Length: 384
Image (cartoon, rainbow, N blue to C red; front, side, top):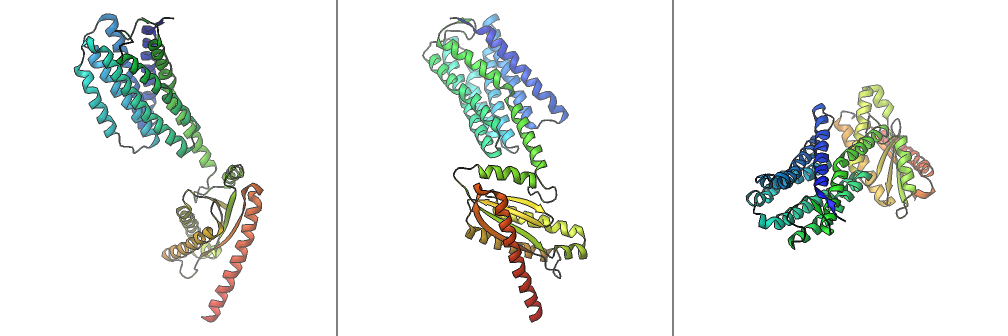
């Protein structure tokens, strides 16, 4: 069955040009970041390069290969750079674009029809290479930000890699003819059609990534305490369900933290000082646990810290460090006379048995610790 590659290439060119404009227009309103400039610009350049191939075969533009093929290389580099910039706004793209410029040079100086198959093979390998860059970046993004659509983007770009490499192999062995367009049959034509189909499908893939990232950001705002950045009760519910569903790591340590003499701090220095103390405690805990656990503002001056996979002995060390740093921070903030501190209750259990019971036990352990601290404080005062 013969395929009309001329029509397919025209559709691909128009699709990429439309995708380019759709991404560039919202940039003027500030709705998208710099990634949209790269993504939109890349698709415009690739669309231009594809149209040059059609015009060269249709009306014999002698300069079309020297502009269209290098444009395809630069365009693919911009698309890969867009994904890198989407994943990390501070990503350095100069090395990537510099490599693309070097790869484009042979296509600028070579227009001999006798080497048509070599140019197709070369360009196909370059395209596959940039697609691999996108696949790696999309997988890392999906894992880091838990973006399910990141796996979709990775799949769309991964599928075209063997298609490009297969077409490169056929072109190198002179099995694709002497023109890109026109009526073609055989494996080479079907590989080209597959490339075009997935290139069009993925032209709007970063939009769905942006939509999911925005949805996650909104959910994060709804699940965060505005003052401390810790999770609120809604966030705790989601984390509790996720922890309960884990099949491997079911052991869980919970810490209940309560600021001692918090009311006295508010009464003597005002609520601004109290808010600063809560923020300081949250910052200290976040720095201590990193990505190993979850901090939840339980209410008022109480916090819950959930530590999956961390034993109670290690949690006690973390708790002692947190208490020490908080006490030093409060002294630095001028709360020497009141001496705010933090009481911590630590228990270990099974996440599958229910988070609520574990937190209740940690709460009781915290009040025991608070009582011991209060007795020690009174003894110290009498001795003084």
